[in-house]
Image: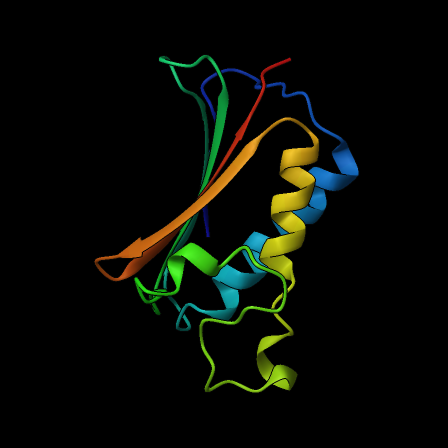
Length: 126
């Protein structure tokens, strides 16, 4: 895993426990869906256009099919239907992450293509 922090300390308006849970969910998914030895990167920066903090988590490996992308934040929705609930979870991690981010005034989005999946969390800067 590689971590690319913002150049200077980056303070955001967020509940610390909620942000930790969001990161646990997103990083857990990235690890689960990346082949052994593949890169998972975490980047944090301030978007110059909006002035908001942007956290990006990118992993290589299994992509989310385009037809599933609009539904990935729905509770109990699992894009990989072939996996059992025992090995893949019940499909609530991304829904929880979305609720926690939005409750703190932020936004979360996800995309996939070209052999990689990226989640972006946008939060207000303190």
